[in-house]
Length: 388
Image 1 (cartoon, rainbow, N blue to C red):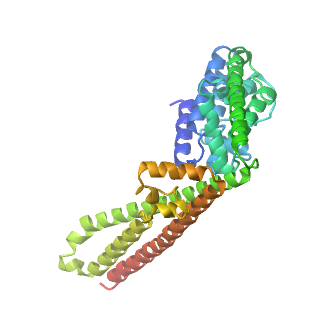
Image 2: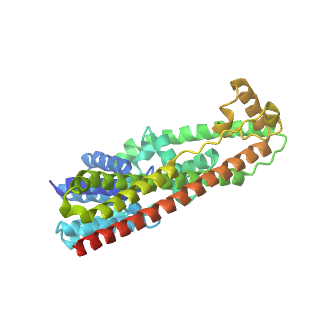
Image 3: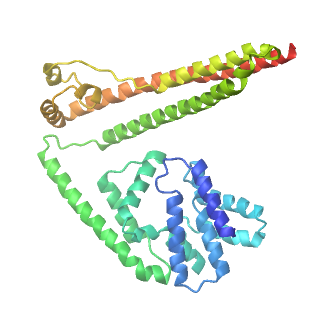
């Protein structure tokens, strides 16, 4: 296996094992795309095979710094991981330093100094000329929201992209200028058209409202808080699933290996430790299941309760009992009243918080049972062997 294949395999496994799932843009898909685009430029540029190898190596590693869950300074962390990799492959220091500098050249506002750095920059930003630019842009937007808490409205995001593509970004290689720049400008025109359309829609909506004031920060607060609640719930479920898997394995091993041997006189001393281990594992599984068990409250209410806004129409446990026509009319009434919407969202967040509180309390008990059970079982096994 050559060094480029080794680098690809290493980076793919690193992303798979260590990259957070919130990185919807800076991941192995983006890295592979950048590598393929660099190869496209290199085919039309007089680059030696040795220089090509350095460029492709640098591109495989240029975003692995995101595995540390921090975008700030990721280029330097990426370069350090590349350095460790090449040192293990016994590459000379001067070669490593050249690849190191190529990775640093992908910093957002860095001006490339040679053709290799120009290829790096153009390949890294090649998605600006892609037909799927909109999807890529939305992936980056979602990633920023989940990692930095930076939320943008559609207008803000489109304006930010238009400004960057038109005024702050340019391609450097002759190939990219000739073939990608026109495609990039097509994407800019699409964004401008979309922005104008959304601005017109927003103006029409504002004209219909009695209250012209709109507090976007409140909407952002609800969005970010709901995202945080969802992520915390996912984390709790993931931890519970880990405990379920581990203890299922322990029980399987005990039942298949230890328990069948307990009927012989020489293994009588292992009966108590074995059943202590089994009991603690079963108890851990019970509490892990309780922590992930859905807890849906079903509220009975009348149409008068809906009219008096005592029902949360955003929670399926309430509206699934309603007829569609009643639900549709109630939702239309709610959409006309921002205060009613906010009250419903507040209720939703509050009860989500109560569910999270229950999950994490049960999860804490589960971990305590698991830890205590393992310790007691190990001590019991130790005592059983020493007492022989």
